[in-house]
Figure 1: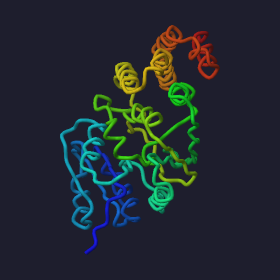
Figure 2 (figure 1 turned 60 degrees about the horizontal axis):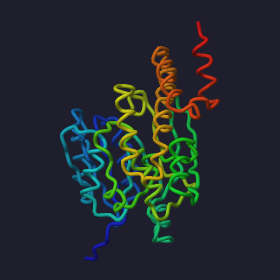
Figure 3 (figure 1 turned 120 degrees about the vertical axis):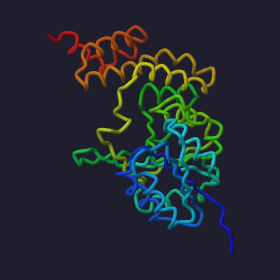
Figure 4 (figure 1 turned 180 degrees about the vertical axis):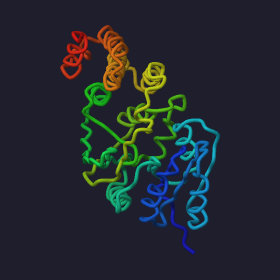
Length: 302
């Protein structure tokens, strides 16, 4: 029997998402091939996750399942990457799903350009009310580390999304997901990839459907200010010296993100406090019209 080397390891971290897990796993296994492996890392779920996964493990020899005490999504991702045998990692969130044919698209791109280290695909954002929006990736220009970091962290001109990005396992070993972050753990990793990757390719082919829902960690505001400070520390811990001058502006940007979240939740005292902090840190960021117009309305509101 001929053994096929593993090209892509699909890593699915999950925590109490049993109601979504069938959708994610079926979307992966429906396009299976001998050069793939699937690793599911259960981050201490207390629902029916283990039972659901065992049904797949019993039917598919290439599905691997590991249970860990709850340590957060970053720890689960790192655990799966450490177990992986593939040259590339395809991280798929357990509440998302791959588009049919997505793996074939990624495989073809790798074979056509063997030196590539990162492939960023399009994705569909699916909202709770059923609205869908296709989001296309933006080409990554050849710029200095400082300029490319500015585009990503401050100008928001470059964006990545989990479940629609293929990453060299070697790069993820060099820059593991920061385990002290319980959400947003991909931001420091993506910032590092922009500088460290020799070649980043994009495709307008849709790779994944990314589902947004009320209980998603993407909308979690608990411990938001300590998380923002931890994020800043992690992002800049692996960036070169020339990027460090951007740290204060990025801190302002994080507070502006908190400002917008507080406005969304009608938490006006917090919104005012966060905007003042951002303005103190960097007027350049805080006075951008997208934020300033909201601040004018907020501070003159009865």
